[in-house]
Length: 366
Image 1 (cartoon, rainbow, N blue to C red):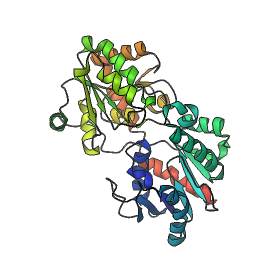
Image 2: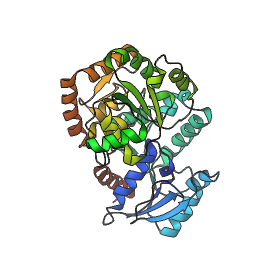
Image 3: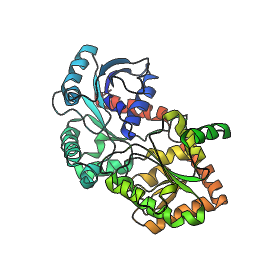
Image 4: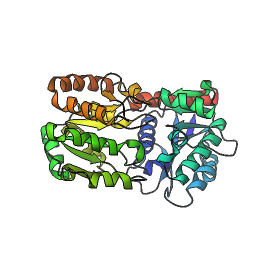
């Protein structure tokens, strides 16, 4: 079985980029089960796995749509792949090639106001047009599966739910590693942490307001890690106009090797996202022994189970109360730390790769 993955999303620092990179690596280790070829972004920060056959393209060029929909079929013919895999919501829009596609969420249909009009319109039209043509559709959570059935009318029997994994690098780090990253990034001694792209659905404005309520009593700063996304102006205004602005630390993107130590250094991860198809940061934090607060909506209870604090993301007071309890109650934090490490071990990219290969086989009728 030979699969060609359209891995151009590997140039993206979002969750879909992380999914593409880690799944490709895990699949490449199973060469006895699947021969893997990759359409990989030229110049990407992270390179492709060595064992895969790689075809490079400029992922940021104006030719991306042609690469996604036309050139990939020429590469498929050249390398002889039996199946295409589209790992980032949009599949093949025309042609007779068999393909599997991964749908991470349908937020662009559910809440288009969270995105720029061009982004939401493209993903809505392209996802709804390509989903009926896929041999199999992978979703990263049961919540995403349910949305796909309800909002796109997909037959449940064509969907495979395969959870994301957590890389082995995410584990509690030593005091020395924490000290080094604290100095390198100028992190405060006590802080709660947010990690993610700055965009409306991440609910950063309510997070800032909630943290302001407890900051004077809990003695923790707020550290925000992540790149700017879209519609960020209201978010930045809430941060810059905060009466505690000098205690909010905008770190920007943190390279992967430093991130586990940042998680370990934090008093807690605070992540009240409004909607997620999966939500990797809470799981990564839990794997590092850092207690997490997240939302009681969409996929997040499915991912974290009872190993995190779950709050209503629309209720600023509830977020504030959750942060305060998590930060100030050492015994509670100790219990959550232990539970989180156990919970995170259930999610591995090796397991995701095994189940993805099963989905490939189903797509080919093997």
